[in-house]
Image 1 (cartoon, helix red, strand yellow):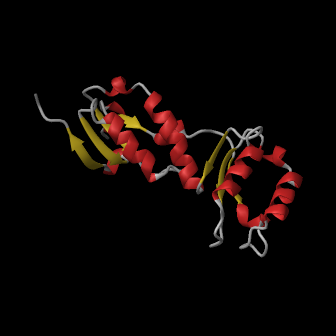
Image 2: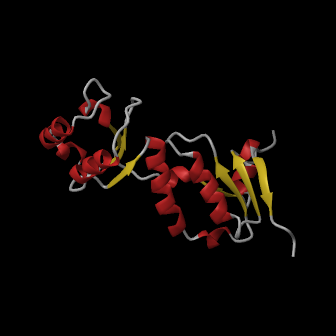
Image 3: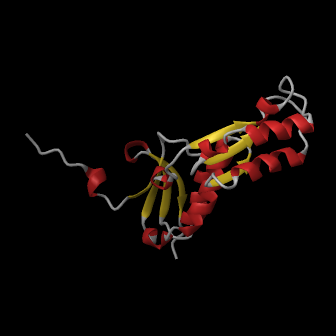
Amino acid sequence: MDEIINKVANSVLEVFDLEDYYPEGIHVQIDISQWLLEGFLLKEKDFREQLKNHDWSQYQDQYVAIYCSTYAIIPTWASILVAIQLAPFAKKIINGSLEDLNASLYEELLPKIDYSIYKNKPVIIKGCSRKPVPMRAYVLAVHYLQPFAKSIMYGEACSAVPLYKAHKK
């Protein structure tokens, strides 16, 4: 019987896995509607009082997205006031969804990577994430990889989709 050879393991193909850069820790959302009258009406005095009485320490060292799950019209200062309360505890605070939060984290992390290790190599951007990697992170990763990579593919080595091939010089 012939020996089975793993051609993928023996190839020069470099795998770029965005999950490797996913910031560990708790990623949460805070819904402002919990402090609105019937989830829709912001009464300033009541809103400020509820924020004052909220246990903000529960967000210690967490990544926090501030959003509103209802169609309430919320003044800009309301989200800012929530952010001020979170500031002593949270690692990062954004206004938006969890996807916006994760995209923001990748936007900080990806520019710091040394992409020169991918110079003139075929690169596959790993798909099938177990962690919530936002689409914006994939697009940004390609932006940084393209000047270095010989080629870029997406997916898994066994079924990659070609995306880019550098022009021969």
